[in-house]
Length: 261
Ligand code: ADP
Image (tube, rainbow, N blue to C red; front, side):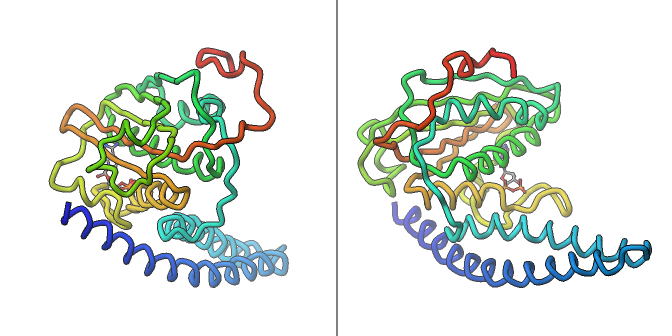
């Protein structure tokens, strides 16, 4: 318990620092991007110089994506929470998910058809989901199965020592599980820290799970990980229940996992 608390405090301190830095850095990138845009207009007709301006543009866009992840970790994103049907969001993302995974990985849906709406920013949840799907793909180079599971949970159902940071209440759980290589128990504590990666230079940024961590916290939820070497990994996101239903309910047909896109 004391160790868990120390870890939570460290994450909090790192979050404050990186959030502040990312915010200032993001402002600088906006200036770079704006000027690269202008340069491209001025340099129209001068292909060599135009190519250089495009390089500036691409690099600053990449930087901007990284700072967005850091802002999320530092809980400095502007969230627009709304009642969200997570089953629907998952099914609408099915095509993107299967393209990201590739043909050698199967997708399985295990969705609670009585799922409560969650009060979250759906765009940010899509970003978090994509980060988890990319990690699952990287963990299953020889193929496997990705399972997306949703269920309703009340605080009393949760193991209190593990989820002590969550206030009592109702939560919607979204679990992303893979049958991949798993995470070494020695590094399990570190995976949500920014810049922690085992993927090697140029492959991983170490910001995917940090973004997921910050997003769930900022939404009033929690994220947990369970993993077993050579068996696979489960990431559970606990997101607050919305008391309001989602506006604009979809047709029942569109909610079936096997319905065509
Ligand atoms: P990145 O993917 O850029 O390395 P992340 O923050 O998303 O950054 O993940 C940090 C590390 O956690 C990864 O480098 C990997 O070691 C480990 N990890 C995350 N998800 C999984 C997974 N599903 N299976 C195995 N290892 C994982």
